[in-house]
Amino acid sequence: CGHCAGDVLLQNLAGLLQSHMRDSDVLARLGGDELGVLLLNCPPRQAMALADKLREAIKDYRFVWDRNSFEVGASIGLVTIDNTSKSTSELLSAADRACYAAKEQGRNRVHVHEETDLVLARRHGEVVWVARLNDALAHNRFQLFVQPIRRLDGSESRQAEILIRMRGEDGVLILPGAFLPAAERYDLMLALDRWVIDAVCQHLMTERERAPPPLQPTMLSINLSGVSFNDDQLHDFILDRFAQYGIAPTQICFEITETAAVASFNKAKAFMLRLQTIGVQFSLDDFGSGLSSFAYLKSLPVDFLKIDGLFVRDIATNEVNRAMVTAINHVGHVMGIRTVAESVETPEALAEVRAIGIDFAQGYALSALEPLATYRPGA
Image (tube, rainbow, N blue to C red; front, side, top):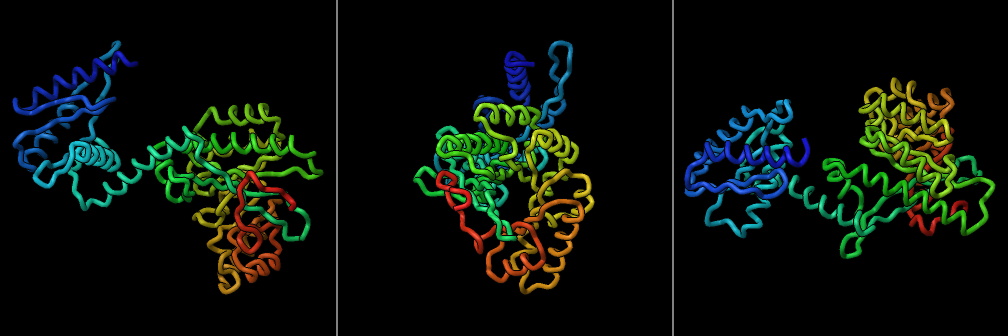
């Protein structure tokens, strides 16, 4: 419909809402598609009834534009103003969190804010992270680290997994577990994935210019989020970066989780096949964590199978986990897929995965994380 239609819709909704409000109530546009209603001298129960009445009015409304009819919905957050209320900004923030909770619970509903509401607290924390993530992207405050992936037959390996960290406003590094949930929930993973791809390709170009290329080129593994499979432009973006930085596709391996691959199976498979034709490789990460692991493995064109660290971590003391790892390794080899043991943290675990015959391993028993900028393969 465009911006003009949006403005007309908001004007129509304003008139609709005012027709259902009391004379003492105040309606205002807060920004974008957000409207605020101030209910004066209105007890919570009456406010809830009025909010639900407004929601129903919007639900029944049909917006007609250019001979088309559109349904409209509203998610409403309700906040009580009393003698414990603080500043106006905090009240608006609470209302914003309540709106997010209403959307999260299925949209087109009213959610009453409560200080003890854990759902709201979590949403509020993620909303704060969204602002921090956008700021970090704008000011290039992400940093890449690597963890080498070692061959277990003793031969040289020039392969490593890329891991992302965010540098806070105070310069302190922040682990991905703190910011990735918000990035996934609020559609920032596409931007993060593209940032990482660009940074890795740029690094490989810099390394090529710094020193003569080795006989065995470096291969860096990039974790790719599940939502990226639905990005129709990502394939062209990757090819563009390869061309811009002069990167051989064989230097890149994308790691996808079993869960992400299953969620967008057909798109994931098509994406993988297109890039494999030019030499890009793929790892299936955290293998064994899903309920239908082997069934999907038969259909996915993967080059590496990364065995879930949940099974590897205590492999030296848990016979069931050892049997699982042995079975996964055997199936992978039968299918011509190279296997990688993740989370190899102790000498005992390293000895076990080597005895089983796994091809590669990574973990603190072999190598700690180091900044990508200082990483020297084979050193």
